[in-house]
Amino acid sequence: MNIALHPIESRMMTVQEYLSEFGVAVFGERAPHARCPLCHEVLLLIGANSMRIPPRFSHRTRTRARCPLVRYGELPDDIAVTVTAQPTLARLQRAAYFARWQWHYGLMRDAALAPSMNITRFLALAELATQRQLWSIPALNLAYVPYILLAMAGYLPGERGYRRGGSSVRFWFDATVRDVADLHRKHEHAPRLFRAHYARPRMSRFPMQTHLFQLDEVRLDPGYLDRPMPLVSAADVQDCWDWMSGSGT
Image 1: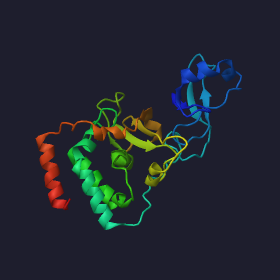
Image 2: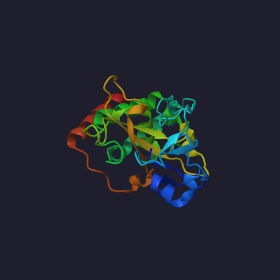
Image 3: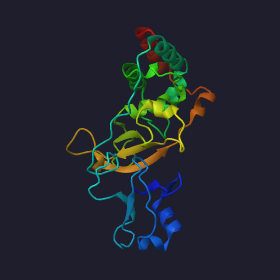
Image 4: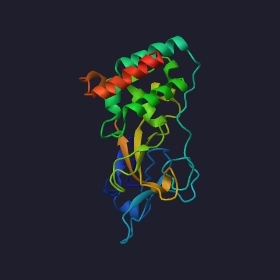
């Protein structure tokens, strides 16, 4: 990978920034280790002395971390929702979410997130939120719900092309977020969300870590609800209204 967490500070850095900051200490293996942006484990710098391969960050060989960036490791568990069902609260928060559904839908379709998002998938994710009891979380920050749903969505269609956006994208929160409640707690460093790009697999339906070729940090922006309503097609509006009428929202 070409980005990592700074060894000490809470900021991302590229391989070139790491080399520039720590200089010759890198080549003598005296520099502090960068950290994985997702699992926060130590990363090694591979290829710093090579003339054949570009330098990159990598986990230690045979690492057992459950991290999406470990080539042959296990994936972490899906983000959890640990809450007791509260039907009245759930109904109120779900209704509040759909009162601004155009904003949430517009955010999820943004080029920096999931531009392939369509109204059918958007509504399916809202139903998933109901099944997972997301609406029952006390004081749920509705501005974060689209990000949470993207992290729950699994693999989503990427942009067209084998190496241009990949065939799939998947969203992962870093190690500070294992439960949705973690997003509502105070942290020394703010939680991060990442979009992983995967090339098209030849022998399987879904990609694996070996198909990962790019990782982007996603800026969590709750301010989108304060901006003007995004444009939504008449067909999407009709589909959403039909679905809400049938689901009792």
